[in-house]
Image (cartoon, rainbow, N blue to C red):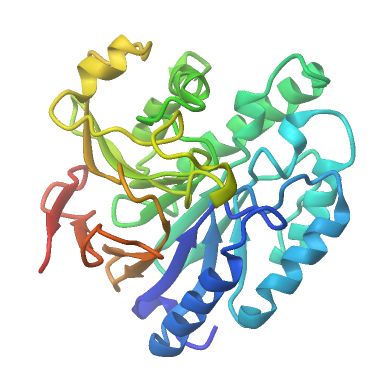
Length: 344
C-alpha cells in the first residue's frame, strides 16, 4: 500500500451495479478515479455484491475486469451477491466467482466465498449471505448449502472471538443481503436473515456479541442507514449502499424497490411486517433515499484510532440537495456505545 494504514486510510463502497445490465459503471468508475486522485489515502474498493448479472457465464467477469481497468491500482474487494452465484442453483456460477475473486489472496473456492481482511485497526469480514438465504428449492443443492452455511457460521463466530481484536478494534461486516430494510422487494429475505439462528443465537446477536460496529449491505438497490441497538447497549450501524433500483428502462417510479421513511415508527412497522424478537432491540432509521433514486457511493475515512467518517456522493442526483457528510464515533467513552452526528 502506498501509505501506512495504521495512520488512517480511506476506502470507497458501492454495490449492485451488475456488469452488462447497468449502464452507470463508467460514471461510477470515473467518480472513484477522481476521488483517488484527490485522496492519497484512498486504498481500496468494497463492493456489496451483484457485480455481474449471471455468474454462470464466465465472460461477464471478463467484462467487469475491463470496466475496472481504469482504477486497477485500487484493490477490489467484494461480498458475493446472489447474481454471482445464481442464487445458489446448481451450475458453474460459484466456481466462476471464486476464480474471479482469487486475486484477493484468500483460500476461496465454490465451497468458501467468505474471507477476512485486516487493514490498520479495522477488521473486515466479508460474508457469503447467499448460503443463509437461498437454502432450498429451485435447483438448490440443499445439503451443500447447509454444509457451507454451518462452516461459515463457525468461522464467523471464531473470527469475532479472536482475542487479537478487542474493544479498541473496529469490525466491519460486508454482506450482500440486509437484515433490516424498508423496501418491499426482498423483504422476506431480510426477515429470514434477522431471524436466522446459529446454535440458538440470532445473527444480529452474533454481530452485537462479537463487537461488530458496522454492517455494509446491498441487494435492495436503495440507500438507507439504520442504527440497531440491543437493550444492553451493544449494537451496530447498518448501511445499505446499492445504487439505483433498476436500469432506467425498467424503473417506473414508486414501486416495490423504493425505500420508505420509517423514522419514528421503526419497531412497530418492522413488527407489523413480520420481524420477530424485537423486544430487546431498538431500531432507528437515520437516513433514507425515498425519491429521485440515483447511484451512490460512500467514501469512508478511518482515523488512526479506528473511528469512521462517511461522506455520501450521488451520481446523477437531481433534487436531493448537496452531498451529506456523516460522522459517527464508534469508540466513545463507553466502548459499546454508538453515536452519530451531522457535520456542516
